[in-house]
Image 1: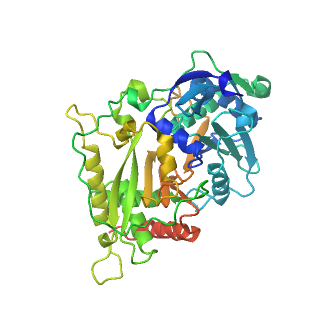
Image 2: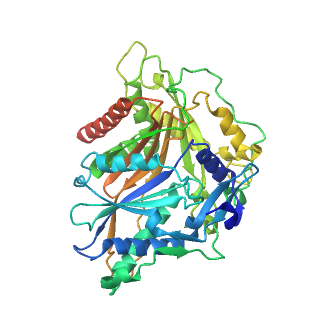
Image 3: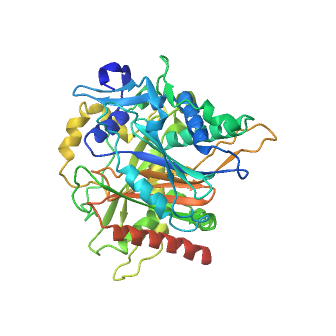
Length: 476
C-alpha cells in the first residue's frame, strides 16, 4: 500500500517522532512483550489457532492504534491509518521443540532465540506501507493448548504500559470466546481481514496533556570527568544480542525484603547489584557507569487521557554509579550493594520531586521540543561514542485481566511475562528491562553486539542469580 492511499491522522509528538526516525535510520527496530497463557481446564478449545485469530480481531477493534503507521518525510513525521489488516500476515505460529522450563526453572533458551530474531526484525517492507506490529504464537509441545503470545510493535505506537494494555485485551478476548457455548464452530467465525473505521484514531501525544515546561535554571551537572564504561563505538545498522534471566518468586521476595530493610526501592537495589557484578568482571580502570533510567509518567497524567490508551508516556533520568561505591581503598574485594543502592534511590527521589510551581513535574524529554529536526540530530550522532553505560527500565508487575463476573472462573491464566526490545544503536552497552509476574521476575537483556562480548552478559546473569540465591540462604 502506498502513502497517498492512507488517511492522515495527526502529526507525531516528539517522543513518537524520535522512535519513528530512529527506526527509519536503522538505529532501533522494535520492542515486544510476551505472556505465557494456559487454560483453566485441559482440552478447553478444539481449535486454538482459530481462537487466537478471533481474539486478535477483538483486540484490533478495541485498539484502533494498531491500524496506525508512522510516516517519516523530509518535512514532518505523522501517523496515517491503514484501511485494513490481514491477520494472516501479522500473525505466525511456531511449535516448541523443547518443553517449557518449570516455574523459575532457569533459562528459556528457545524463547530467547525467537525473541532475539524478532528484535532484529524491523517493520520495513518491499510491499509498501504495512502494519507496524506482529504477533508470534509459540505453542507448547505437544498438546498445543498452552502457548506464549509475543506481541512486537514499533516503539512509535507503544511503550511498556501499552503492551500490558494489549495483553489484557487479548486475555479478555480469550476468556470471552472460550466461555461461549459456540466454541465448536470457531473456525467458521474467523474473519482474517479486519477493516478500520473512519472514526478510528489514536491516543494523544504527550505534549497535548503535559505543559512540558523547562526550568529557568538548568540543573547542576557534575563536571568531574570519569573513565566511564562505554564499550566499542556504535555501528549502523545495529545488531542486537538478547537474553533473559528468570528468577523464581521465593528469590524475588527475599530480595524485595532486603531492599525494604535497607530502605531502598527494588529498582535501586537491582541497579546497584548489576553495577557490582559488572565491576567485578571489568578492568579495574573502569571508574564509572552513567545509568539511564526510564520513568513511566502515566500515574501523574490525566487518567482520562492515558488510562487504557496505547501511546508513549515516559521520561528518563540519569544516575551515576561509581566503582568507589563498592571498593574501599587498597581492597580488591567489593563490599555490599546497599550504599550504592541508597545513592540511586536518592537520585530517583530527586528526579520525581523536581516540579514546577504548579506542581507539574519537569520532564527531561521536554528539551526535545527545542529540536526542530530530530533526523539531523540523530544522523549527527552516528559514528560518535556512546554517552551512557547502562539502561534499566523497571516495568513493575504484569497486571493480567481479571474483571470477570462474580462466580465465574477466568478461562485463561496469564503466567510468566517477558519484555523484549532491540538495543538502541547509539545507546548503552547494556539495555535491560525488568517485569514482575506470578512466577517471579524476568530481566530481558539487550545489547549492541558490536559494543560488548556476549560472555560478559553470561557472567552478569550468573552473578545476579548467585546474589539472589545467597540472599535467600543468608537473609541477614
